[in-house]
Every structure is written in C-alpha cells, then in structure tokens.
Image (cartoon, rainbow, N blue to C red; front, side, top):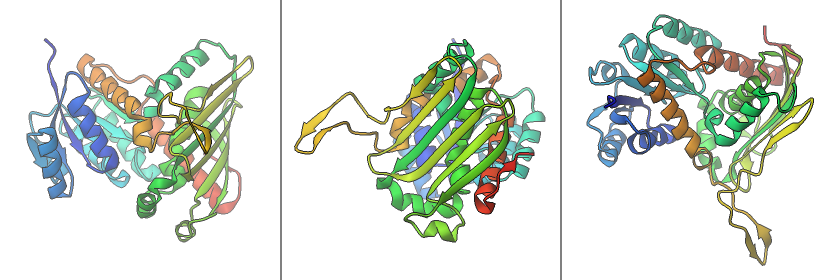
Length: 340
C-alpha cells in the first residue's frame, strides 16, 4: 500500500484556504497534517474545521516537523522564495503557487534553492495548465493539429462583485501584470513553446483612482513578441459584471482553437423578462476548482513517483515574472521593451 503523503500548507488566505480544503478532502493519498498562518485564531479555526493535527504561526518551525513530506506554499507572494528555501533546506518537497516571487532577484534565489536540492520535487502552481480544456488544447498543438502557432490571445477578467477585497489587496499585489497576467504569459509561453522577446503594454485607470496612486491600471493589455516569431495578446481587468471570465484563442497556420464561454457555471439557460442568459462562475476559485485539485494531484504524484514536472519548473516562474515586470515597465514608460 502506498504511503500517505503528509503535507504542511503555508498561508490561509482565500487561495491558501482553498488549497488546504482540497488537500484535506479531494487529493487521494495525501493528508493535510499541518497548517501555518500568522493569524493564530484563523489557524485554530481551520484546524478544527479540517481536522488538522499540527498548527503553526511560524513557517520555520513548521518545516522542522519530521512527519511532513511536503510543503505547499500559498503565503503572500513576497515571501515565496524565502519559504521555498525553508522547505527544501528542511528536506521537504515543495509546491509553490504563482507567482514565484515579486522580484526577479528573489526568483533567482528560488532557482538556487531548487538547484541545491535536486533530490526534491519542486512544482509551480500555474493551475490553468491542469484545466481539461487547456490541457486538451496543448495536446492538439503538440500533435500538430493547427500547424505552427501564430497568435495566442488571452483575456482574464475577475468579477466586479469582489472589487472591495481586490482594492484592499491591490497595494500588495505587485500590480496587474504580476498578479493577474502571469497566467496569460505562462499560457502564451506554453502554447507557443517559446520565450518572450519583446513586450508593449498599455492600459489605464477608467474607474478606480487607487490604481493611479499605485502607478497601475484597472484595465491593462499587452502585446508580446516571442523568440520564435509567434505573437501574444492579453487583456485583464477586475470588473467583469457577470463574474469570472477567462477566454483564450490559439491561432495556427492550419487551424484555430478557442477556449471561451467557459464562464458559465453549468448548462442551465435562464429565460425570463430580462431575456435569455447563463450565469457565470462567481469567482476564480469556483471556475478553477477542478484545476486546483488536479495540479495538487499531479504534485503529490510526482512526490510519490520521485519524478519531476517536465515543463513546469522554477525557471518558468522566473521567465514569467521577468516578462510581467517588463510589461509593467513598458506600461509605465509607454515603450516597447526587450526582455533581456
């Protein structure tokens, strides 16, 4: 019988709590053995809810627990590299949610930590790759079904209904390009099979003045040129009226793949005095629930089988963060910028 993997999870914010619930309830062969957050009261509440035996408010203490096999890092992004190093240095396998960290310099530190422990599994959390539709698109691209990829267009829109919490988070998010567009940049790199060469980012503040104070945008876009000549375009905002909306189109020399209209939370069509409509997923957590579970299943599978993710590495995290920062700089200067 396979050994149950005992996991400690760091961070119990919205996404951290989601990961904790998924490990506790949906990942076969894994056990949520420890949780850690700076809010002791919240830790105690979640531990009781999910029946977690060990609780911590200090990551450095949690990673010393000899029962733990792996650490899941869902702490604030500015601590990711630090927590990755703590986990790996303590002899634990490590999963880290996106982004790898909030500066390229700290991403490089994360790279060094991973390189220092080649016997440990490290996996980065770009969950869209584990969504059935996106995984199928990638399979078809790799099989040559649409020829060479020419353009990847990606839209990411969060719901207006969550704008209050979004505005509270904005000063610590790293900005639209690092916080939201990293998913789009990762998909563009993944689908084109190429690194980013040049970026040109534009956008503006159309409604929420806080973003002016942060030198950021509430609606942002970027055009991307890849090393192999392929093109990318991405758009993001946090004020989609209907709910969580993510659309992706991949145009090839011999065909096109579209992943759209997946905002609908089910197949129900509502017809009333307002007309005919579908209801969207209310937030990104519900839209990507299955993908979040699938990526954790993949991570625990790698740990159990002693294998490494072939195309989702610490270097992908650095490359995406580097492109995101250049997008931010391009937005601020109005210039097209090379990555290196």
